[in-house]
Image 1 (cartoon, one colour):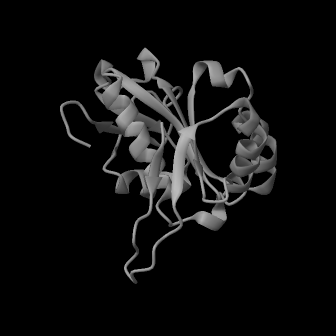
Image 2 (cartoon, helix red, strand yellow):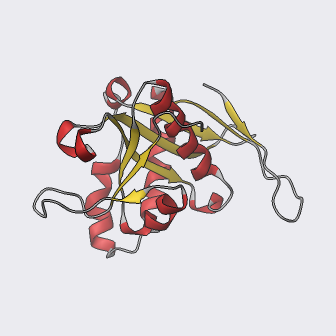
Length: 177
């Protein structure tokens, strides 16, 4: 998978090109550093961020069960990452066949440059190609506006003890991306 982004901004300056590709074991250190930098920007108490960081880090075995995609800049630096897998039946809205987007993380110095949207589009395309009817996300509160801007809909909490507070769904079946 190689997808490039060379969008032009409103002031006609070309944004730095990013390329998407499948992550490798050699990328894990850079991926986890990027995830840590992104998490440290979240509006959470510092202690919560520090204690939760290890659970967000990807390990070599994750490459076997998740599809992990990285965004690289022209200097081959990883500036974004996304990961997905088929959603658990209990998490699927109305039993839909869903792809679960684990997260999209972008280097904070690269925010608002289209990298997150590019990674989201790659997840949508993967869902479509693999025959899923939609894309499911369990997000941090800070990411709510991003996912809503991608056309996702907020899911109602049906079981407060089990359901993630910020869940979003986007139907993509029979829809051109």
